[in-house]
Structures are given as C-alpha cells and as structure tokens.
Image (cartoon, rainbow, N blue to C red):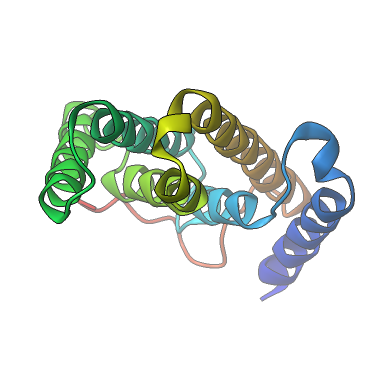
Length: 172
C-alpha cells in the first residue's frame, strides 16, 4: 500500500509538471505519459524492453497509417488489413525478442499513437508527412518521461516497482 501511495505522488508530480509546462516541449496532453507510466510500472520490475516495445508499437502504428495514406483508399478493408498486419508485426517482434519486448507493451504503444494521431489523420490524411512525425515525437517524449517517472518511483520506494511480487512476463 505504501508503494502505491509513493508511486501516486511521483506520478502526480510528473503529470502536474507536464500539465503546467509540457507545451514548451511539445507535450500538450498528459495521457500518453500516464500510459507510458502504466507500461513501465506493470507488475514486475521495470525493463528497458517495455519502453522499447512501446515505442516499436507506436512506430508500427505510424507505418501502417503511412501505408494506408499512401497506398490504400480509406475504407474498412484497408483499416482492417492495416491493424491485422500491425498486430502480427508486434507479435513477431515480441516472439523474436524472447519476451524482452512484451507484446502487451507493443500493443499499448500502437494504441497510444493511434489514439493520439488518428483523429488528425481522419481529418487530413494528406498531411501525414508533416503531422505524423510530430505525434510520434510526442509519444517518444511521453515514453521517456514515463520511464523517468517509473525509475524515480523505484528509487524512492527502494527498488520496488509495484505493490505485487515481480511476475514473469506472460505471453501477452
């Protein structure tokens, strides 16, 4: 319980600082950072592989949206094919990494980028080359800040990253 309170305080301070000053570094919304914190603070010790998987998932999302913008009309079949390919790519990366880049973290990165950028993409797919890199940069900054918040929490809490006992990464 004490670890949860300490984690909440650390995350609250980081989130409040971002809400107040994030615009200066291009982060105008706090939720991507909170998503990155959740990925880093998931059961077990935080690992670099989680952050890497999160960023890879975001990049896969960027790539599939780019392929849709460049190659396919905006129809349901193209959207379905893009998400199916993306999930398979993330699964293969998780498998090849031996679980060090867990699939669930990659899926969270995919979802984070898609949630941040898809409304912009829907309103102006032709602006992909100018708008998408900015969204990816926001996700990358959020991942870095989320990782720092988790490491701060681990330092303050004496190395414990979660209230639960460390668990092996599951297949997802």
